[in-house]
Image (cartoon, rainbow, N blue to C red; front, side, top):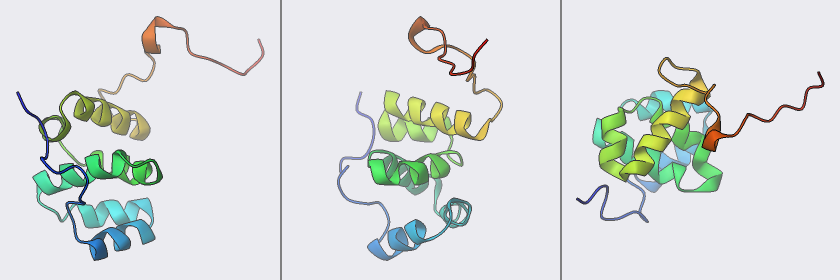
Length: 111
């Protein structure tokens, strides 16, 4: 079963729109991304997430995408992107308290 865009290298929005999104605050960029059709918004979230310098924008956009849309776009990675976006915003259904890989969370506080 194939997931996602055939073209992962080209941005799903015009260069001008991407430039505007990166020049705005995350909340302004998210508001502008909400105007995009849902499939294009999921593509944009995955495109940005896959680039380290755009990852915060990708997660902000992903927070407004459906889990199904992100999974359709990026397969299992879409599920992870959705989870990270939800954890970042503290949304219901995001279980940030679960330890990763069965390990206890690291704390720098002294007991």
